[in-house]
Length: 360
Ligand code: PBG
Image (cartoon, rainbow, N blue to C red):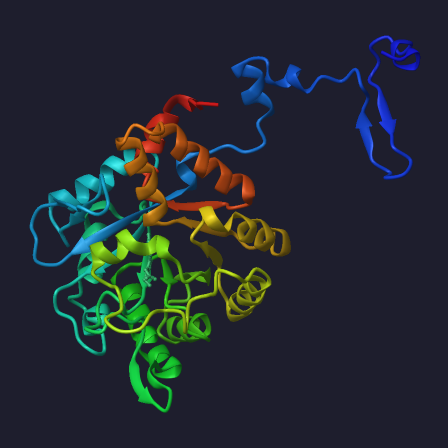
């Protein structure tokens, strides 16, 4: 060690590099001291996970009376629109301190206009009423708003023949979205979560909610939703893959980063209470960028079905420790800047986190 350093005898020693202007702890400084034991690592950890960070997706299926396991989404079930299986499942999550849920509907009655998405007797509407009757307003209920699981063609909006071929008609779709939003609010939704990526969807929904007496119902906007292969298991479960074409005409191009700021700006301007980045894992840079630009807007990240399943499959093959890998992924999403994480692993991870345990 050089003489100048030794002469400091244990005082905190800062060195300024005059060319960069950065001040760093000097050569005596040893970062490993802060990694020496689990207690000190927990004490200085910059990001932490809590069960209260999570939103658990639920799939409500018409025409069943008991929960049914889903093949493409390990550990998850189709839940009935009412009855014990639905209520017990939610209660189990709440006992683990996971109290926020995102509801998706699964119906076999599909048509061009997605009738079952805004029907009073649609799967999501029936389940909402039942949950409110049984559990009151403690569970926080988000409802996905889209048409793809309810249309016979599998697209997220109303389709129309145009000079460019069959296309999703943006403004006709907004009229249907407004109806879906009002019906979900009426049935007891706390936050509407539009996932169709139509232009103007947040404004259209805000308008519809306010003019129907639901100004207390919020909007979690899928502001930056990318056209992604990681939705595979979800589309299988909900049977919502488009029957022709793809979603690249409305979902974002994975090559774009700054476009995410434009999408976020528009949704905030239109009145979104919470904005979202989706998927999460391959889009940590987007989470980080959006949070840096809009720190005052709560940011959700959707750890989607393909991301969850990759870890499940690798874990089953014995290639990785699935539980630790999932905790690492969720921590990374939090570290990147997400305030809220929508994840299929909410219950498993909440179980691990019980009693403040962390694996790091
Ligand atoms: C519907 C919707 C999708 C997901 C959530 N809402 C699928 C899609 O856009 O094709 C994907 C969720 C997941 O993969 O976990 N628009």
